[in-house]
Image (cartoon, rainbow, N blue to C red; front, side, top):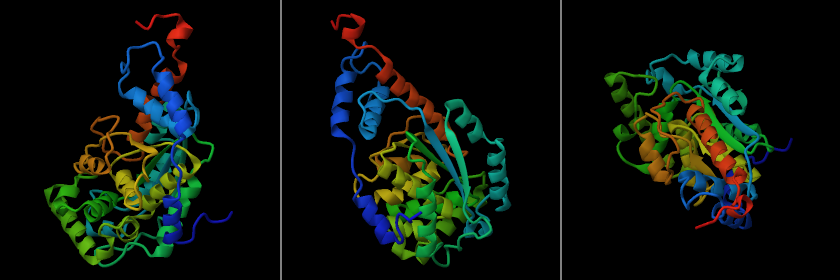
Amino acid sequence: MTRPFSNLLEFEEILKSAGGPDLKALGEAEARNGQLTKPPGALGRLESLAIWYAGWRGEAAPKIDAPQVVVFAGNHGVATLGVSAFPAEVTEQMVLNFQRGGAAINQLCQTFGAELDVIALELENPTADFTVGAAMSETEVVAALVVGWEAVNPNADLLVTGEMGIGNTTSAAAICHALFDGEAEDWVGRGTGVDDAGLLLKAQVVREGLAANPEAAKNGLQALRCLGGREVAAMAGAVAAARFYGIPVVIDGFICTAAVACLALVCEGALDHAVAGHQSQESAHTTALQALGKEPILSLNLRLGEGSGGALAIGIMKAALACHSGMATFAEAGVSEG
């Protein structure tokens, strides 16, 4: 198979050349919504979600039949600095749990009829410690982006990306600090459950990360390379591929939001095909979503990762499309419009 891109410049060019929604289908979906047997706006945000989805799928009355969830796993060099309450071995152990069907994400995918793929990226080879230099070379980050791109099923009709990687909330905090400014303390959270001392350590690591990688400031792809992880880059690659295939995306939690933020800084509208699945309990997630202009569908105090919040939002998306595409119009039902 030919690689979709071989360097960051080619990846950037693909992002900038990506198409938008089908305006004809968007208009037809809006018209249909105005004819359904309900008062205008009575289904609230379900209506705008359905219309948004219809535009990206190019159908006035679509439905969701083949959602895909992809969980990427990677190990981080900064994990050795003590930024997590769990050791790095847990990444591989959880991957095995996903593969055996024993994790929360397995149950959620089964509940909402989603295909689940689990992809581990060189767990035996953690990224470099970004407090002393870049986490990845260009070759390494491009390889991870390609893995993410190629993980997307072109026949899927909705995509959720999830992650597993001890230390990756610190990576996400460093990316957000680089892209959106603020203080390091604004972006770090408890993650896997670190104590107050652990929180101070995470902030120090984030500060040192940006100091060691000044090229990451306000530069999405360099932030991804210098401060990200393989699983973080893979999520970005998958979300970019979804845009290429016309597949709407549901963004998961803080780490996924940091990953896609790297795309948003490459070009305006890079995330127009994506909605935020939920607002997690990780303290900086709300700030990151606001910076991207994304309103979360759910807010359930989740902080698990794995794609769990995004997977839950599949149910909301399915409900929105079921109402939009399945309801009768006033004419069909013989109901007076008032």
